[in-house]
Image 1 (cartoon, one colour):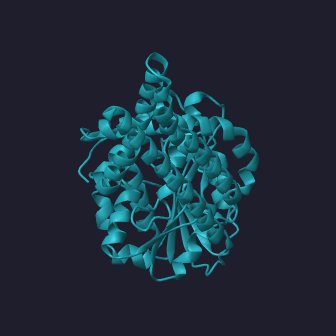
Image 2: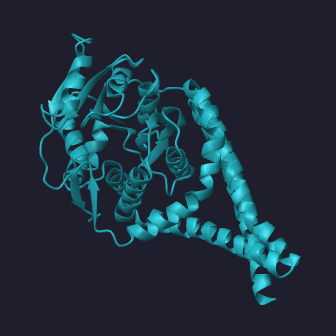
Image 3: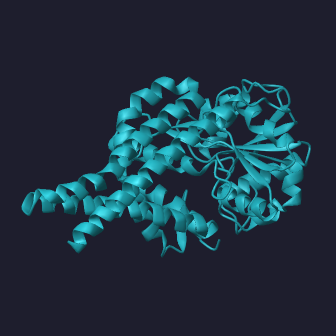
Length: 390
């Protein structure tokens, strides 16, 4: 009976935790509504920076969305590894349709301790030579709406804001189980974006004023970093600046994940978090391990109900509630972001059921990635290996 009562206790705690999570989902939706209704405050001269490498799927389309922003005062700097990089010729073919516009393509400078992406961003900042009042950074696999830049830079008019950020939403371009898992896994990270304690700027869609770059000495931090966003997060928090999440600035990426590509990517993301934001890494481990344990106990309870006594079905049912509510939470999140990204409404609905069901195994995968990352001192990213030194 001690074990039975323990299962009942965990079941009740799991139900309460799930209800609280659902409540946080409602509050998240309210935050999104508030963000969508805020006025744009200003249009500083902005430099949009995109780092490109290799023959990215739909790269030409993604570059075009950046060059056709509904914004009155911006320039674009695109940085590739070198002139032999396939991205270089793709980008130049797009630029041929935009003659006379303030658009530039550069080869990346080399920084021995920085990742390829960070080196590209540093190159863009140097080439801009502080002619811009703000910088907006966007990933090369991101598709953005015409109003993305205006929404992203507007809150920077508030001096207490250090950076603004969007996020990424994965839309499986060809279906596939692991593409839906990747989408659900990534979407779970949005839970933290409005959190004052755990929120962070996401490197694929973020903006910062030039004066803030100088004040927090970001160039020096980036010269020794492999992560643009996590190191920026640390620098901003050291100086007491806020990070503002803008759900309408969430970018769309069309993914085609395999089991190998997914686990390589997911483990690398978690390993970077451990190196640069250990508090968030510990929080993730506690939360996801707890829900994984509840699932194990639920299966054990139902097995006991089958082989011993039906009374064991009671804690089993309680322990399964978090999984059911997790599916509901995932569906709720999709509804929320459908409002933030109205141009992708059909894609959200098309993937709603598959993504929501895939969310069932996210706690297991996240727990695995966190445990595996605990002993990782090195990651591989786009053909280069980097030491994890924080």
